[in-house]
View 1: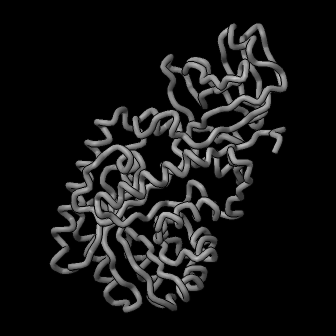
View 2 (view 1 turned 90 degrees about the horizontal axis):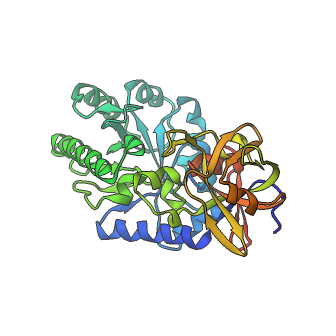
Length: 365
């Protein structure tokens, strides 16, 4: 397929290698692998997981659960504090599927008391330092109140404690990721010991890509739920979770203008394609993507100072050297490695693989 507009291109081989490596890591540590499908949101890529024996998945919403349930995925955790307005949709899923939800308050449990029509699994969300949603691991009174409310409803089965150490995404090094992981495991292990006698089958589920990619320490963990690893991106590369060659997606953007006075290249590809996530470059300025050009039939990754420096709605501005400026021509298609592949994929809604296949994503979120 000829590329004529911003197109997200997926390297199928690299993507499948990323999946295989994480599947093998989970097996090596005797962990249940429940990958988060919010990054790719694709039935086709879901089949690549299924072909490797994956049976359990994580999603972000009831609608995403329904999307994948129609394709035969019937063991699903909705890893977002449950939205009570979607109870009707949840009930529709419970007929033929094993669904887990997560909560961090008693009000959700009370709402479900009279509304549930089938059985669900329940995980209590624990915050181990990210401080988004969740309960502190030492807030036993709050945890107990949720457990007491859940025990009154025979349709709710307590599964265990779940956490997402999202603060690893802002880590400055592999060592910092390992330290965060160690702290997370200590908190979750202590929590497990506190409640294990009361709930002998309770499980611990963790889920961030940096920890799952970098560390080999999963002491006390029963399940991992990474998602971004399927594609990786520049954030993961900056942390040390992957190499550049492990990043499976590239945005292909047409060159629509050249500005010689500034050594800037204007591409058709803006915030509506990439999102506006950025990293601080080595010169202290924002970096929205790394550039790959093709010159004399050779693909060349430009240095970090030659990068996507600005995004408006449809436009992207590339800052390059004088030499590189001459190597890039009007109408060329340049490749840009995204900062955050999850949001880039969500913005685009589909991929073109390096095998020439077009892969659609789910239509609603």
